[in-house]
Length: 118
Image: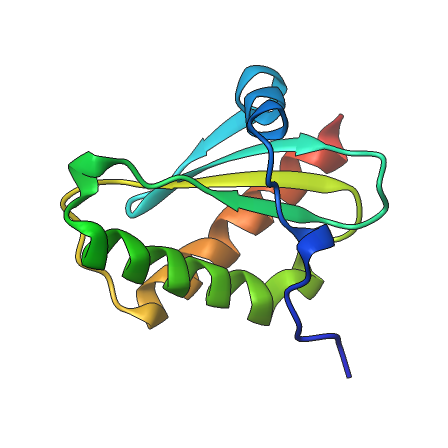
């Protein structure tokens, strides 16, 4: 059974880690959120979530972050090793968990296809 936790080692926590992904990573645009992806040498995936004030109040921003973390936690086995991903939800979308999870899976597949071509 795959590991379903979400440990500190799986998170991007420092500004320089986010900046490295934004500057060197590839962007994958989706309807509900965009994903920036960049390889790492750690042997496991890491995720960061950035939600700006344009998205809404604190309640909406925290809710979308919780939903995206859960989508990652349940589907991190699809990502593979050595990838940093930053997710940026797009304002104006009131998405439920099923839609977010579906888009997350689609973006992961697109990222993997792009990685396999390089």
